[in-house]
Image (cartoon, rainbow, N blue to C red; front, top):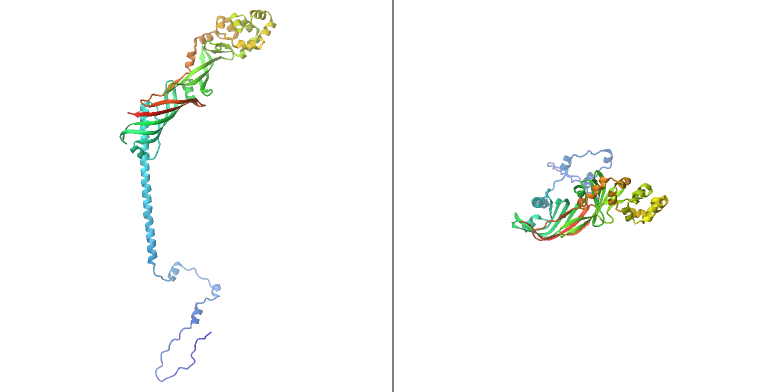
Length: 414
């Protein structure tokens, strides 16, 4: 390693003025030593926390980079413009959507009020117009689909619980979107419901309840007051289509229970009239006086088909009586005998059997059509001015009577 040069010569002294001393050049080793840190300084002293102002003052100055700053400024100024454009587009879309929905609600309300007036309904139907947007459909005078739900439609003796109809391919008629005069419905399919709850209220007067009986039938159970007596009534009815637009119920079985003693079915058939119940017939055969009173009436004996010789022997001997009445066939035949005419002709027999003469007299005056009328009902769909509207299928469910409706080419409006 080279060592720095050190002058060893003595300065020459002259007679003139002494020259100005020339400062010696700093040694590079001294500069390096001044830059080095003292290893004991960090251990013996604590550095005070620099203040922000001191740090700022110690930061070296650097020239501004105009090129980089200009790029950042252009990018930042471009983002708000794009955001504003998106906001304006979203706002415009919201306004257009709100206008379309408002026009849709207005059209549905107007259609509901018009249907209520034309069909003479007590409540306005619910109208739902499908498809989006609505304004373009209105401008083209064509609707994709419309669904109408009408609650409580009067139909003769009953009220249809709910009528639902859906129409497709509707063509509007008029001079413009705001001046519509009618509509042509190309296809329509609907559903009609007559609930048992409404039938109970309107036909049964809260005394008779209706329920499903098989696939196409209904059953009525309730009470009927006759001559001051509350009789249990049972009736079965079949549901059938009446033409292309009507439904009717035909009552084919009516039964009135006089307690547990007897049953009455209006009519003249072999199973109709006044008949003892199996429990009552069994009790009669066990009581000697009652069974002898029955065997004393020739008309009843003839209907039982018992020979006269056997009857005379039974009336004379208790053993023969028990042998005759104890046979299983005798009990079965006794329940199939119509006692109405014979009982009315022998009032004493009614007293022995525990029947009221006034009740039986009132039952004879209560005809089958009178009882059946309490449970009969029918309704028909209105005939459209044009097109075809008919019932397609009628079924009975747990909640009531259901009917499917179909139609084509219906013209609505003026």
